[in-house]
Amino acid sequence: SVKPTSTIVQYITFPNSPYNFIKLEQEIIRLKVQELAPQRDKFSAKVEAYQTILMNNLAEGELQKLLNKQTEVLKLEEHIETNNIITESTKKRLRSELFEKKVLPPEHKFSSTHRE
Image 1: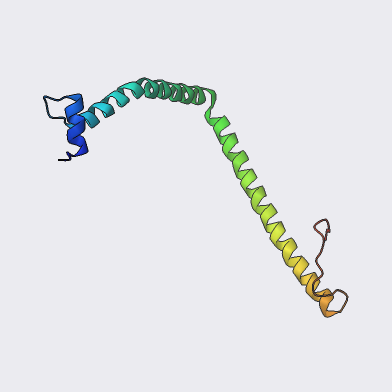
Image 2 (image 1 turned 180 degrees about the horizontal axis):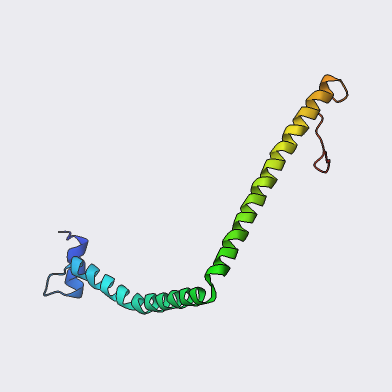
């Protein structure tokens, strides 16, 4: 007769007692948590230390300067994006006008170095 695998494993490891896989899983988890706890504590301590350094080094005025600079950068990015859209729109309009006047064939593309 063929026995289930868990029964065979139980018999090999502890022939005189039944084996409880739930307890084994719980023990593995407990050992893993115990093993990783010092790393977690060390990492948490580092994070707290960096937070303290940042809080001490950044006065309110400095933080406001950083926020203002970030706002300037965002506005500049929006401006660049708007100009790119306008440039593409202008290129399409010019291409259309030149095509209508039969100056350019319809497949002509402006070079990327062309400035309007």
